[in-house]
Every structure is written in structure tokens, then in C-alpha cells.
Image (cartoon, rainbow, N blue to C red):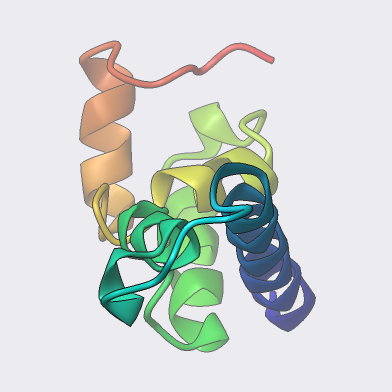
Length: 104
């Protein structure tokens, strides 16, 4: 889980830095908060919790809802960004309602 989170942050930083390089080649910076890379980082999906939190949610999901063990853990991590689901029960409810992908 630590490697996943580290890789995600590294990829986000690289992507936002590249966006800044592509779209602000000769632009004079007035406010550092307005540069493309800073705006990109503010709007990119985030994981703000410790890795053990995500391990617990995924383990709870697979344990409580074995019907959905076919859902890859990487997809579950995608669902656990700060702006989405927080618990195994919320993910399960989304699966029941057809709001998330359940066939892989």
C-alpha cells in the first residue's frame, strides 16, 4: 500500500510538473498559486490517509462482501480517493446500485 501511495503521489507530481512545462513556457509568474502546476495539484485526486486505513477498508470489503472479491484492489484504491468513498459499506452500496464497475 505504501508503494501504491508513493507511486500515485510521484505520478501526480510528475504530471502536474509536465503540465506546467507545457503550458507556461514564457509566462511571467505573478502569483505562485496561479501557475499551472499548482492549480493541477489542487485539483488532482488525493489520498490523505495513512496506508493502514486503505488496507483496512479493502480487507473489510473483501471479508464482508466475498461476492465482490473479483474487484481488483487497484480499482478499489481508485474508489478510495478523498472525494469518493470512505468505507467498505459505501463501496458495497455503490456496487449494489450499479454506480461502480463490478465485472473484470
